[in-house]
Image (cartoon, rainbow, N blue to C red; front, side, top):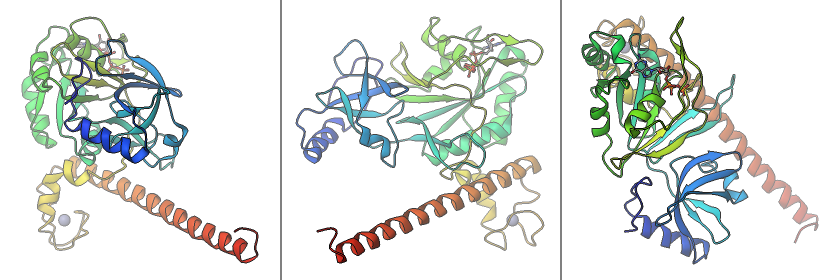
Amino acid sequence: MTAFPAGIGRRDDLDAELSELRDQLGEATLAPARVLSQHSGVWLVAEPDVPEPRLVHARARLREEAEGPPVTGDWVALDDGDAIAAVLPRRGTVVRRAVGEGRAERQVLAANVELALIAEPLPDPNARRAERLASIAGAGDVPVALVLTKADLDPDADATALRLGREIGLPDAIAVCSKSGDGVGIVRSLLPPGSTAVLLGPSGAGKSTLVNALLGEERQATGDVRESDRRGRHTTVTRELLGLPHGGLLIDTPGMREVGMWDGGVDDSFDDVAALAAACRFSDCAHDSEPDCAVRGEIAPERLEAWRKLAREQAWVDDRRAAARARERLGRSYGRIQRKARWVKGEER
Ligand SMILES: Nc1nc2c(ncn2[C@@H]2O[C@H](COP(=O)(O)OP(=O)(O)OP(=O)(O)O)[C@@H](O)[C@H]2O)c(=O)[nH]1
Ligand SMILES: [Zn+2]
C-alpha cells in the first residue's frame, strides 16, 4: 500500500485501482493524489511522499462526466502533464441539490468521507436543519454525528445534546465548547487517524472555531458574531480538506443557506417514521388523516411535518431527474435517427 504523509488519508486498494486505470486509459504514468480544495478551474492536490501540495488542472472531459468535476476529498489520478486524468470511484459522498429556485442539479459537497459531523449552535439548535443535513449524508452512505457547538451558552448542554439526538434519531450527539476545549477531545475520538470526516452546518455555527481547536492553532479564519442575533459573518469560502495533528482528516465547509435534497436518504434519517409506516394501511400513507395510520400519534408532530416536507421535496427532485433522463434518452434516439437519415442520404459513411 502506498504510504501517504499525514494529512492525506487512507484508501485501501488505491494501488489496484490505479493499475486498473492505467490499463484502461493506456497510460503507464498515472500517479495518485488527493484533492485538498477546488478553485475556479484548478485543484489543490496532495501526493504521496511530496511535502508540498500543488495546483493542477483537470482534463476537459472530466467536466462533462456524470460525476461532475473533481471535488474536495476526491482521490484522483494525475497524468505526466500534471492534469487530473480521472477521478477514482467515490465512497461516501455528501450531495445536495445546487442552490437556485427550481433548479435540479447536483453538487457534491464532499467525497470519500466516513463521517459527517453536523454542527448546530447552542442555545438554539435547529432540529429541522440538522434533520435535512442528516438526510443528505445518509443518502450518500455517510454516518452522522450531531455536534452542538457553543456549549458555554447552554447550562445543560450535555442533556440538550442527548435529548435532541434522541429526538431526531442521531444517537451520536455531543456538546462542545471550542473556547474552553470541553468536548473537543470527544470530537477528535470520532475521527480516527487516516479517516476523513466532513463538517456541515450553518454559517456562524462555530465550525471553523472547532476546526481551530482540533488543529490546536489559528488556522481557519473565523468571523465575529453580531451580538444582536448571534449570527456569524460568512468566513469559510471554500471546502478544504485539512490534516489534523492526531492524523484524522476533516473537510471544513462554508455555511450553507440552502441544502436541497438530491439522492433520497429521507428514509434513512427518519427510520423511526419508516419503521412505523410499515404497519400503516396504505403503502403511500402520508400519516396525515389516512385511516389506520401507525405513525400519526407516535411521532412528534414537528418531526412528522419535517418528514413530510423533505419527502415532498424529494419527490419533486425525483420527478425532475426522471424528466431530465427522459429528455436525454429522447435526445439520444433523435440523434441516432438523424445520423441514420444522413447515412441513407449518403451524407455520412
Ligand atoms: N460562545 C461561544 N462562541 C463560539 C464558540 N465557537 C465559536 N464561537 C463564535 O461563533 C462565531 C462564528 O464562528 P465560526 O467558527 O466563524 O463559524 P463558522 O461555522 O465557521 O461560520 P462560516 O465560516 O460562516 O460557515 C465566532 O464569533 C466565534 O467566536 C463557542 O464554543 N462558544
Ligand atoms: Zn401512516
